[in-house]
Length: 469
Image (spheres, rainbow, N blue to C red):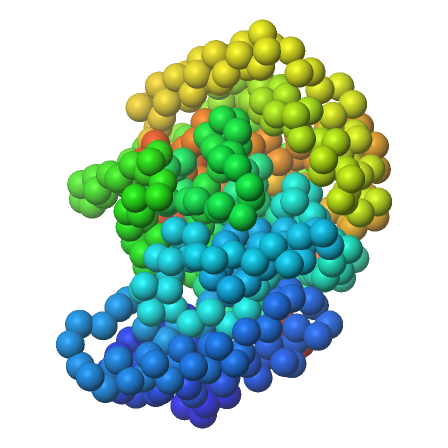
């Protein structure tokens, strides 16, 4: 294999080849740098170039391999990290001009875990301002383009990570998810992403200036975007390592009996808001594939409390936004100010309403958890419509409500704290389309196993995209 072809390989293949001495980490890195130089100038997915530091890390990885002994699972694997998380010596800018010099002293736990596993950080990936939009654009770095169709969003808020992985710049990209921010970019780019159960991946970001408010903490998860399920499984085991800086960390459950495949409920239109035909067809295709893989698949008319999910999630997030919206608006660009004003227009800072939303959240969680006792995995839309046209991004309150409804199953995973997995299924008229699998709390490994079985039955490939770039 020539050096320039290593960017096509998976993280697992790269780590194995480096560990076995079949390629150097330096050669692997140079392959990815060349690929990034080819595609990133147009797409703007990686907005902080760290190739010099990465070259030093690759040399160190080769030296470690030469010493022998046990080697970490991601030795020499190039990755990128999202600009909204702390990385030592780098700005946690969140795409905000005023935060361009917000330099972190230490790695956040998720980035520390990736680095300890031997990953080589090639750069920082783009995100919208404050990571609070479903489209990736900001006044500090500009917009990230969707490589499949530049008129459509690459998703948000981990849009830079999704594009970097889909186009071969890196096999693994860090991201995070509070309202679909890992899974929606994966849906838009044709990649794989697990939003882990809340708590199993430790997190801490002191450059944010204070601890997160309660709703942010209980809806938020750190994770990665990959091109295949094997890499997602590998990265998950790396990410879940304990870090004492996160007192809310919890251990993940071991995989259930691998010989017993869980029942799967299939719901094409949760909540009755409508699902566009390309997505509905992808769900049907995925259901048939899972049945062929030996799963007991049952179509259900609906899932518990989905309309309430939208209302309660909005009440919690917007209630907390009222406490910080004025400060955010002072340093935000015009696009985010417009969207922020819509988000807080009908928000309430009434403590009674805020607490009532927390109580109702518990009710919703209980009902969905009980449903998952009968059907441990739910197959549904990720988003119920293809990635939207950039010009259609939430022009008003009605537009924001429409996008939220389309992303209702993404939000369900966040409100409940359940693990949820985005899996690509195919391409519809040049645009990727995929599905979501959601599983029982802390049984992330079961969900990843089902995703791997689904992937094995499908013929999805990014080669079509690569060949035209």
